[in-house]
Length: 303
Image 1 (cartoon, rainbow, N blue to C red):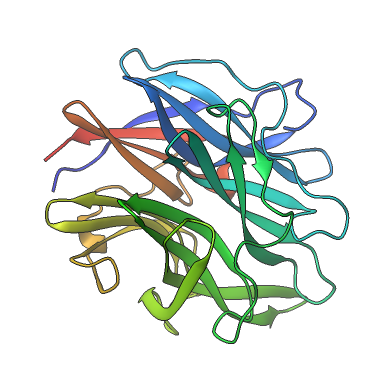
Image 2 (spheres, rainbow, N blue to C red):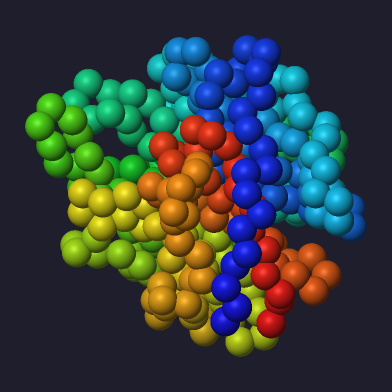
């Protein structure tokens, strides 16, 4: 498998917008037309609350334009499940509508936050999105007691498939609470009502975090890129393959990308999203401090 060639930092948090004071994290591409892709991202404001906006990029020229002046996905009202954070993770076309799956956070007294998955739908081809019900898309249940996050959704005919970050426990490090989470799977017939399979795809007790799955379907099955973190270490990007989307074989040694010797991604590298355009694959990703400096881009020849 070819190694990724880093093109560097292509987008930095914009100045002068009230909803972005720092960070441009969790880049989520969606094809608009030909080489034009919309990159949804999340920014933190001066109070450290997070909302989502976008910019467009032409993959041919690498030019960036059409930055959103205001967030297209806002945090919820005080007391709602997403009153502190609303991060776009996946956008799926369903006939004439666009389904935006996102993670919302609510801060709590004993843990730093409680994550849930939300859904917003656009009926005007992405000009605006309206949240569905202002409630978590998937409620707490016996097999999902601690939180769910970073949903990635594929629509295959009449079947919808979701891979997401499943929080399995919280523990204290000094005076801070830290979660452990892994990637799990859910299915749906309509993108609204989900059946959680209670099955681990990636992760386990030996690993602190596996999150932000990004899945691509090919003729041999499925590929997944994700962020993972071992105990007390920083994020790296991993890679896995599967025949059926449920049972995965990790092949992190084939991922072909790692931290740089210096610069914005010298300490950590995470939150990958991968698209194919023409003869090349493109990876959008974040670096140090969870995307504080912005979004990086890497490219390689498609196999």
